[in-house]
Image (cartoon, rainbow, N blue to C red; front, top):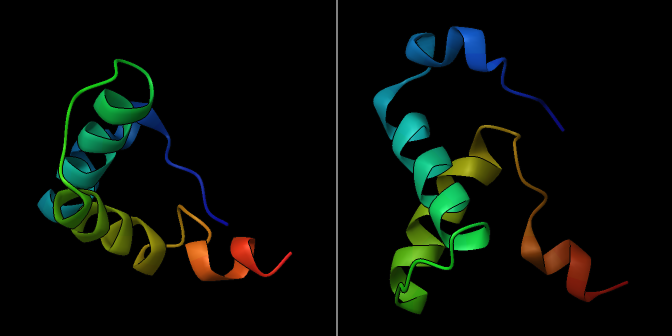
Length: 60
């Protein structure tokens, strides 16, 4: 998995920036979201290599 240097956050594609902001809001601050909203943002993070695919975690 990759990491994001927050000093270079602005250099990330907008889609990745939005997904990261969503992830932090959802996991840290408890922002309410639908399953569809979560899936959209999580898919972006998975493609960027910033989040392990949920499917691989379930099979453990």
